[in-house]
Amino acid sequence: MGMLTDGIEARATGVASVRLPTLEPRFDTRWQEPDTRADESLSTAELTCLEICAGGGGQSLGLEQAGFSHVAAVEIDSDACETLRLNRSEWNIVERDIHHFGGIEFKGLDLMAGGVPCPPFSIAGKQLGADDERDLFRRALRLAEECEPTAIMLENVRGLSTARFASYREQVLERLHQLDYETNWRVLNACDFGVPQLRPRFILVAMKASVNKYFKWPNVIKTPPTVGAALYEYMAEDGWKGAEASAEKDNGIGPTLVGGSRKHGGPDLGPTRARNEWLKLHVDGKGLADAPPKSTDPVDDLPRLTLPMAAAVQGFPASWRFSGRKTAAYRQIGNAFPPPVARAVGESIRSAILKAREESAVTSDRLLRAI
Image (cartoon, rainbow, N blue to C red):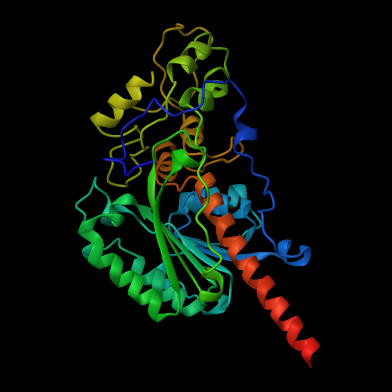
């Protein structure tokens, strides 16, 4: 797939034909062992993860599915923290500004990951970059220096990949090189990993040299599900007779979900252009519904998305619940890193770490035998 011209344009080609399955199996929350050549004791080893700017748990869930165990998930927003507690009560949820969070106690963990705030680089904003008070890349790099993880994964909007921020990117990469990390970055689109949405994201992966040589970006899925297939069971939940016809009309993937900014007026699917693209998919994007269509609603009704539907478009499983009022919950959904993408990259990182461990174990064994 070539570079997209913008992130809110719907596309009706190159998607899977409409089927009407349940959503839960598609976005399975059970982790499956990634394909590695490591021996059994290594492949089942628990890998640790510190996550910053965890939000409502998109990246958290994906990394958990990839086999990482959170030593801490750090987030400043109280509603998002409550969402994490609601879904993973056993986790160490730290409700704190990362400027006031230290990483030294987690020194030597396997992965530090985070979805640092995107407004400084978003095409929808002023693109102030390093001059934006919400730019947390520098703090993230300081935390990496403190906890010295084997690998680092940071994600942001595609805007960070543009020429406008070339100098900024180089500063970030140079600092990582000074910390003895080798770096990789790529723009990945959620629709290439089974998510029914155009959502390009900038992904930065940095690793120690011994691990980085084994790192490979995940393979893409060629046929993402359509919006209709992803939402059918939600639309039909209360017996709406137009659900099947609506799914047939929604035979494409959605534009990027927006509206997650605190400065945004409320829960809708974005500016006029985005709403028009949703309209092509037979969805009213002017707001969110409190409930799915009723059995008494006209079959040709133009439905709005509910919060669970918006979450499904982001690749969340039906079992993942969000805390807070409608606007706060939608903000978490709109800002999320789709779990299937986080899982795919997480599995690639895990595979590289385990292969490096296997190599180290073999080398140690040879040295012991030589002695």
